Length: 235
Ligand code: BV8
Image (cartoon, rainbow, N blue to C red; front, side):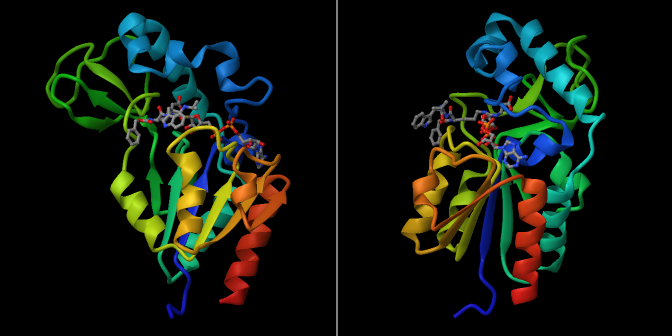
């Protein structure tokens, strides 16, 4: 019997809400202003690249105005203090987990601060706008950089690492996600299938609530620090 449980944590937009970043489906949600298929699909990028670049430029700029919150900081403490296996799988494209100090983070839907060159396939750190078609720092091609984001219909990143971690998980924890988007929304069932205990912390019950052994409703900024204290105190 492993002395320390292997933990997989799935986070969504709800964990960054208290930092001032819009969620997707809430009031003033990100999609409020746009139809998903107009800004977050490869077809949209072919159809209207200016609109898509502007949408992500605005979110990349907004990222500079916000800070990690108590929930991000608590997970960073857990990451630093947990000697067992732990992986934070985030659907979020913001960098707040890392800015809070977390190391074992996997961005399954990509990152705002990364650009992907469609000419030379390089992925480069990118903190500024892409609307002015800047040259790729690797190959110099202008106008070939797209947001390094997984759009609908595209294969999420790190699927093998995520599947391997889920198969070994003793504890699966979901924080701030509505459970509306796949394959992420299916992870709780995989975790249950391998016998892991499943816990959800969310403002409202998610679409997958019935698959969780335990659901704690409330703000991540309150629930997550309390849960991390509990876990570190218990081990
Ligand atoms: C794919 C990047 C092929 C872009 C995103 C099976 C069934 C049905 C459909 C599908 C299926 N499989 C695939 C699909 C299609 C599609 C899909 O799921 N469609 C949905 C709409 C039905 N999936 C895909 O296209 C995926 N790719 O399938 O490729 C494939 C895959 C595997 C194997 C082979 C082939 C790719 C999907 C990724 C798209 N990109 N993001 C960007 O950010 O702009 S998805 C994006 O939306 C987010 O990353 C996230 O995943 C999702 C939003 O969900 P949440 O993060 O949960 O946010 P939301 O606002 O919905 O909810 C917030 C929650 O927080 C709420 O519950 C709220 O109560 C709570 N909350 C709010 N405040 C707080 C809080 N909780 C705590 N504290 C608070 N303070």
